[in-house]
Amino acid sequence: MVKTTEFRAEGAAPSAQAFRDAMSRLVAPVALVTTSGPAGRHGLTVSALCSASAEPPSVLLCLNRDSRSHAAFVENGVVGISLLAPGDEALAMRFASSRVAQDEKFSSHDWQEPEGRPPVLASAAVWLTGRVAAFYSAGTHDILLCHVEEIGAPAQDVTGLAWFGRDFHALSVQPTPVPA
Image 1 (cartoon, rainbow, N blue to C red):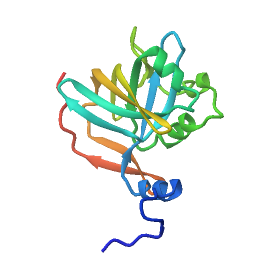
Image 2 (image 1 turned 180 degrees about the horizontal axis):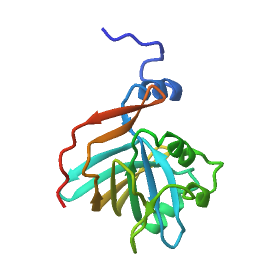
Image 3 (image 1 turned 90 degrees about the vertical axis):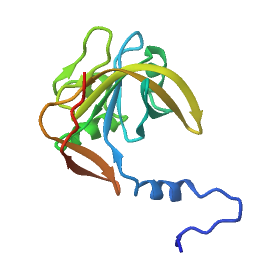
Image 4 (image 1 turned 180 degrees about the vertical axis):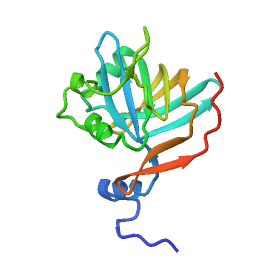
């Protein structure tokens, strides 16, 4: 039997806080999502990210429409995804802050930004670049379906950064080689 701490009328949706509390128990990746192009260079931290398809290689990510970066992702249409590693917690918090200017977010660390591609963190556990193939509206957020065009992965052992229980955690695994 499942116990709950929130009682609600039959047919009523759980409160936003009850939902946030439940989702705090979902292990999620910590990723920087970036874009560049006519609308400028923007980035933010996301944990709402998952694979969608291997053929074509695709990922889904969720962006709040109230984010000051949302319009840049729509206009630029390109996405860089840098999955973070332990030691990148301060960087994740900087990209999560709405008080930090976009240029300031990118002012430290080693960024790669090949021509026509959004910036990715050179030291990321894994990075992906691609194009936004579709936007889907879901409440306060848009779900972006992104087709992956390029992948970068280190050759050494990988330790990833996860978000669980409203805190950062290191996850260490022996990586499967990423084919070119």
